[in-house]
Image 1 (tube, rainbow over the protein chains, first blue to last red):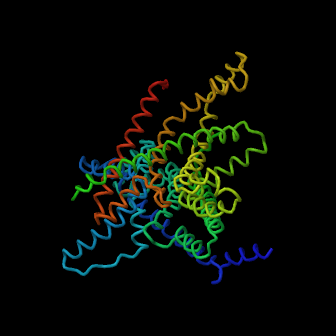
Image 2 (image 1 turned 90 degrees about the horizontal axis):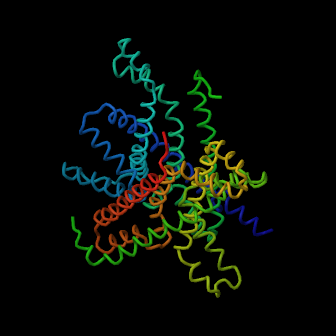
Amino acid sequence: MSSSQSLLELLSPYPPGWGGVLLAGALSTVLISLGAYLVGIAIGLVGAVGKLKGNRPARFVLDLYTTAVRAIPELILIIGLYYAGTDGLNRILSALGLPAIEINGFVAAVAVLGIVQGAYMTEVFRGAILAIPVGQIEAAAAFGMRPRLRFRRIVLPALMPNALPGLANLWMSVTKDSALIAVVGYQELALATRIAAGNTKHYFLFFLASAALYLAITLISNVAFAALESRFRRGQPTTA
Amino acid sequence: MDFSWIFSYWPLLAAGAVQTVLLLVISVGFGFILAIGLALAQVIGPRWLKPFARGYCTCLRGTPLLIQLWLLYYGVGSLLPMIPGLRASFLWPILREGFFFAAVSFTLNYAAYEAEVLRGALLAVPKGELEAGRSFGMSPFTLLRRIWLPRAIRIALPTIAGEVVLQLKATPLAFTVTVMDLYAVAYKVRQDTLLVYEPLMVVTVFYVCLTLLITRAFKIVEAQVPVRR
């Protein structure tokens, strides 16, 4: 029994145990994912509108962006963007005669994952906008709404129910993709687990614990998205 | 941009490419077989088996592949030597390799995603076709082999193509458990030559080409059995 006792102590949230490190890691995983998700939504909305309404060069650039991001392995994208991004920014700064800055790992992680998410979001939003009945948008135009107002009042609320299943998928994938940030050395759940496991030599226990934390994040998000979807679909006819 | 290193590293690059393709083929091949079992367990399996199959899919789809890989490699890998006699057995040279753990965890993970796809496809096969098969006197197994499964796989084919590409993009994770796959080779080139972008670019081109190849191959397979729209 003493061994199971010590296993519980290893997971306790107070310093002799490593539970606190894992929970802090889980929190930073959620924060990175949330940040990247918001960045992705912003890029996705702009990208979708650009793909549908933009001129030819804009569409070409956006096509290149979504195709490239979706064809290149995430790990390579993350590592490439991480180094290229920090390196490129410092080169620009030195060209402008400014001192080089150390880029915060959190900001870099959010930016890199956000750029990856943005490509997928672009496609999700593009599909969702195309699924809106044209009559609704034409009606708004007939009432004299300007494009921006039309987008805010008609297109955005109408695309949400169409986009939500795709958005839910992307949230699940960003929480799991954020584990790849561990490879570039920012401490989130995956790296925290590896450190805890390496220090205590209880690899199996800690990886199982962090898998449970990820699973909990996924299951809670499932419930949240189901609630969100039923809210956005209120007033819509239900099938069957 | 300096690509002169390619001349001295091409054997390594080729070996890495072989490892990457091997990982993909093993995980998709075995994963697909496992997925058929998991999907059937969820659709027609006995009542007690369904929650297990569903739980398996939820757990493997709900946790990052990286964590699953590390759980197997570091976790199970640290427990394996405790099994008496295993280290002396002929299996040990395989069981201590990172490649083995990468292949196993990719297979298990791919099976979970593929099972969900197949489950939906099995349910999407029109009832009339199954009834027609039954009325011809086919046994349940023949029905499954001749009608249900082929039809379901045809329905799922476009999604399967996407899943295979996603699986290809997951293989670089194997580099974190000492597999010398294509990405690991790029990493080594970076360490040897201090070139950051060039090896990544070469490797990227390979992945993109492989992606195009996979999508093209699936297009050809799809064209074999055209679907009337």
